[in-house]
Amino acid sequence: MNRFDGVKVLLTGAGSGIGRATALRLVSEGAAVFAVDLAHGGLADTAAAADGPGRIVTRVADVADEDAVVASVRAAAESLGGLDVLVNVAGIHRTTPTAADMERLFAVNTVGTALFCREALPHLPDGSGVIVNVASSAAAHGNPYMTAYAASKGAVLGFSLSLAAEVAHRGIRVVPVSPGSVATPLVGPHVLPPDLDASYYARIRAPFGAAQPEQIAGVIAFAASRDAGHLTGAELRVDGGSHI
Image 1: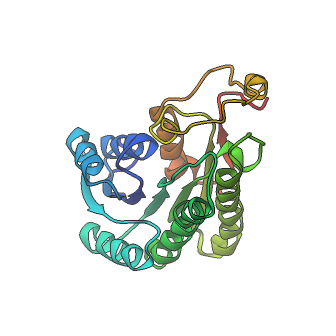
Image 2 (image 1 turned 30 degrees about the vertical axis):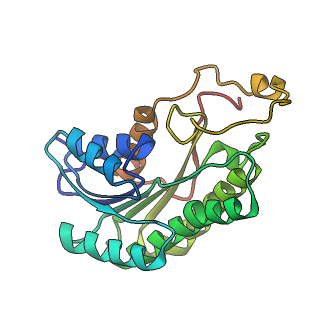
């Protein structure tokens, strides 16, 4: 049996990296996935790669645009015939941000996550609804030149833990997943200062190395499934042992 047969999932950040891997994993297990991303080409590639008993519907939207979020959630519920699971993966990264960069970081990483939660909650069923929000190991552990990103993800983590308490009376689970280093386009283009002391990064290097997006997707799929039916309000840190 597929764990997600008949399950309706709204997923952000589906155009690349962890989001794409999660979309493919959920479709392979039978889910109907409404996939959102700002990148039209990325979404098209994700849809083309989807293979399994599930299906995928795509929509281009900026998760930081409140009107776009409202419209996307409405479209997802109409297209899929309801919602069972929300997975917030969409995120951006800046290493040495300007003030404008910081505003965008929080708009996408934190506010976008909160907006999708707000809009999706009325659609999620009592007793079985699930929200999985992707935070980061940087939310609780220091990383040089990741101050603004860490702050935005720390907000996602704190938001998720409090939201879990807020909606527990409805039987809705909220699970934050915090990846460590992952081989995705999110970290590719960022330039660190030339005088960076790399010794700190040597101290936190994960014994298992950087994760592949599919490995994080597997944890997200678990958190969203009935296998994790007694899990809520607890962070799942998937960092390859970088902080043991």
